[in-house]
Length: 437
Image (cartoon, rainbow, N blue to C red; front, side, top):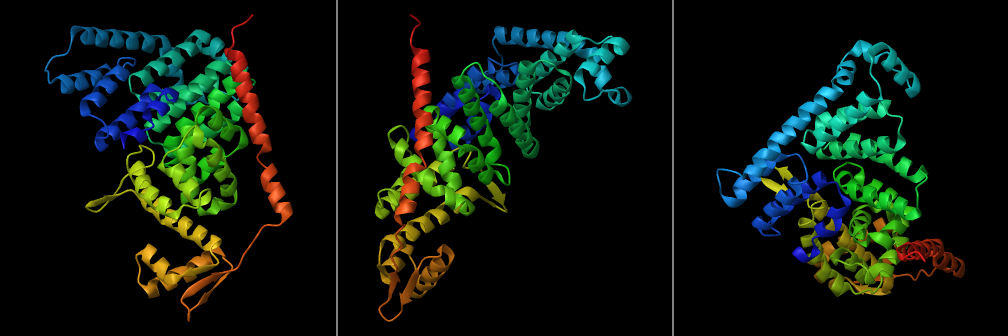
């Protein structure tokens, strides 16, 4: 299943530290050679300040008790730099650790700057030092300290660009600490800024949306309400267009959320059109399953794809989360996915056939006749299908339900704005790529 691993596509849109949990998952699932994973970890660590971790992995990879001298020198350099930054930020850190002093701060940042300067001799240099110290703490792997300092920095910072950078850092820290509620708050705060900010170019704004969606995967597939909120975010026109133009692999996660979320079926029909449009640029067993059921009406193909979908979910770092239950571990998302996927197959099957033999259904469901009869009764009730059961003939009779001409016209014109936006974005990207004359 390594061919369906999206790490090479996802990693470039993440902070380096966010890639480590993904590599840990892949190592646990043995989707790649252990040596390859360890080398990837060292390559990432060399661009951070997590030198002790890098040393441990180096010893494990090369079965050595000692590490190269350059790693020892690098550690000494990091420790020295950390002490220097700690000293530079010390006056402001001391102030922030004094509850009585902090009470003097107000929502007016200009007032705070003046007050800090006059009463505590703390100026912009010390505030900037706090940012550098927080960033260095993050690079060292101290995410808790980094999150606290970045939060305090944003309360004092008057530079909007630097404040935005600090917000990205705090979001990453909260994700890495698995503080999902706080991370969701930071994600929504960041989304508001990205959607309202005036960017230098439309493509720059699109790139920020793509980063946001990739980072959000950690939150949405761990937060209790995440599988609803991922639809709310990814299915917005601006974000869905960004997916179609620059990150079609994210369709895997939106498709999964739609399949396991019964409450969002009204939006599902439009999403199927997106899956159909993007088959040339991206497809995997999950999107192909939807195409089999709702585009090609290939039910045998859909059943085969279900087996592949199960493997994809088990080996995806966002979808394959395991939960320990006693002496066993389960993957809740896989179980929900398979249950709903079977329902999708048979709901569609019932809608396109006027008369269905319950014996055939029983065989497909691997149930006896009586169980199949109860199952189809519940299916009709739950799906609000206009159908009746002929117990004498052992069939289900479906009543035709064709949309009127006005509904068909609305369905065909709904996606026009999205297609237009996509074309304009592609033209802008092409124009920016052309050399100036």
